[in-house]
Image (cartoon, rainbow, N blue to C red; front, side):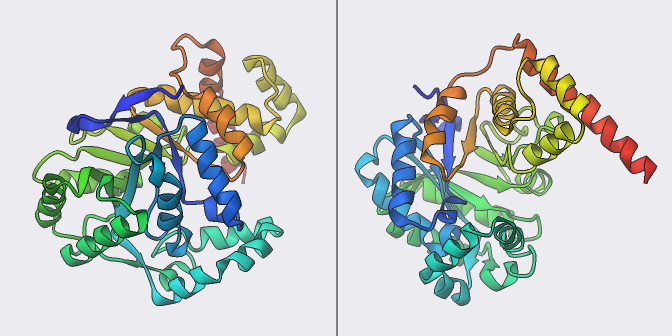
Length: 341
């Protein structure tokens, strides 16, 4: 059973493991995506994170249709602040064959993904996305999300990757609190990278109930607890940057692979081993909050949910050793390599 955590001060709970839907449209089959969401429910995951731009505008509708029969049991989180251009909406309607091609070309798929992550990213970001945090745009976005998700209320509404210069903080704060008071949302927060998110929440005239930030084992010490202006922390992106970096370092040298494997008591040449340690470490670091996990493989959901359904023991020696190897040996080795260049 997935552990439950209290989602901030407004008195409702969510599962300690949430399912992130930003990448599920890498799976081009609609039936396979439905099975993916159903597998998350079967694994005890009750927290589902979506946004108007995910799936080029189609993700909210699909998530809503799958979860509609479970509405009282699940926590739906969506966002405002980033929208789609007309070109992106057209592309969204014909994306399935394109994604089938990309699925067969992993390197090209990664290039497209990194160059279209948001309004300011890469060659395609500005063509696909718009960024606006005006009161009118936020209200329209919220109303549209309610329709797409097929619900009368959103459990958690997040400002999507805001920058301190994007909006008038008092006006947006009032809008969010009014939406909560009216019952359209149950809680709200800010989602994004650590530095701009921290700057944004300091601008608000009152506390930010929820903060959702990218987690990174290499920078974990900066945010072991929610910022002072918040009382609940959701982390995401635990694997995206750290997994390939650690795996490349460990497997670059056979003696290093043996050393790491002997130290932690597991095969560190295996991606599954590194994934296990990264997930367990992230849960232990954010024991009172929630961790977002995402995959396009249904078979991985149950095992992953079971793995991180409880907080790892603080005396887990192998996890401590792994953390130490990442924090000292890997970073020291990379620093030495840079000095030699």
